[in-house]
Image (cartoon, rainbow, N blue to C red; front, top):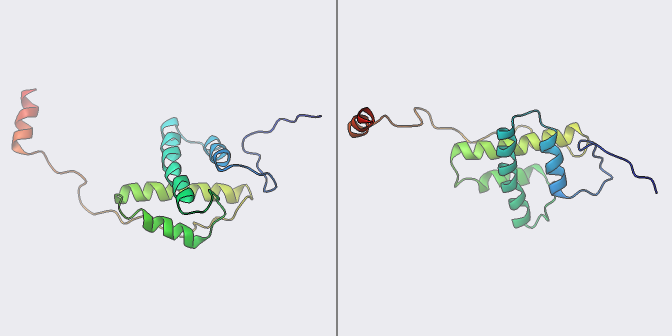
Length: 134
């Protein structure tokens, strides 16, 4: 019996890979910081959970309509969280296409609209006084 060593990014369609293995390979193949890798992993866990909840058996072989359904399932999250989750999924499908595993079904799907204006309010006079005292 011959044992061959493979690198994490060498994935072919004929291999029967578990979703976790695909996600691990995707994350390992990204040229990003450790904190960004951790953020991607957390947001892709949400996607993975959604795949199992909706009876898709954890399969990444879904259609564009499913991605749009996933997007609408995020409506209760902030626009920043929605965009983060969708960006992670888009990056995953771009990677899958680059490895010739599955087409990028997320092309053209946009993130949530972000509110205009400042994200945080200014300090109240009491908060400012408290800050100056410290």
